[in-house]
Image 1 (tube, rainbow, N blue to C red):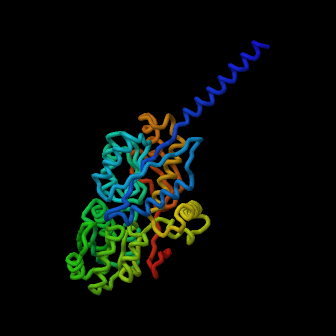
Image 2 (image 1 turned 180 degrees about the horizontal axis):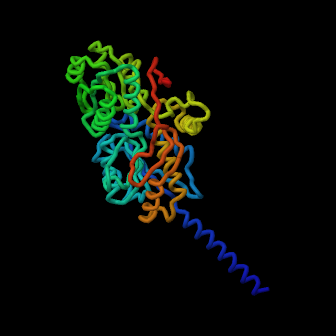
Image 3 (image 1 turned 90 degrees about the vertical axis):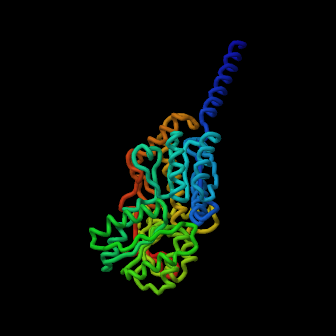
Length: 384
């Protein structure tokens, strides 16, 4: 009996050690999230934060592991974004970074991600070629994909000349370059390339030049509330041509600031904005409606912007990749495995797109990720 009792005790200790060992192995996953809660990009950064709250409310565990979210504000400053990323990696030992609200900030984080071999899921439109961008993927649809949809609409409407005004940064360059490549083969002449800084309070001089050229239409390469400035100035000058924008304008603050001057604006965007107007056969509809439910739960109100959904999609991408990645979270080897899983994602249905990534391609979207919408009485309506 004594021998049997001792064997049972040893078996109990072994079982207890096994349970403890399994628990110890189930280390938490850590996600670093950088956004702009202050500064000129905060009109985008705040919706991104709300989208992340929806994502955490949607799912905060994976395969028995809890997911920790580490969040920092970059104050719309690329240098601060880079410092935040380094802090998260060195001190918090995050496995992946999601961020940030502006293209310059995302590019700054990408440099740190490459140096430290940490995967970055960019929720701003940013792209680095070759090895420079080997540790990043970008969720917002690439400018050429979205611009081509706008140019198709322009051609149908008989537009022959178009004026351009955009930010004097990477986003402004991306849109202009895409416009030039799409417009000329469609028989549309781009007659201007005006620029302004995100923090500028007036674009009167630039708009005067555009109006003097009398283009059939005007398109901007801007985002958020600073993106309303050209439309306000065009309205003040009595411009009557068609106005176009990009998907980076789809948020309520832009609509509020732009007011009557942005009525009738045509823009490309992800399907999530008009999810209830999509057919039931569209797989993006269901995920978008799930997002809206999670957003309502987390924020106490329905979503009214395009940006919060990018944060949600970033979370879905992380969850999908983490479920496939092998290794121990918090280690360099796991970050490599997670990056490899991210860049080999196939047919992941999100709110903006069905994502397919390749190791040498930063963007994962195709034609399924875009629709054309028109602003009518403050609401975005799907254009057939």
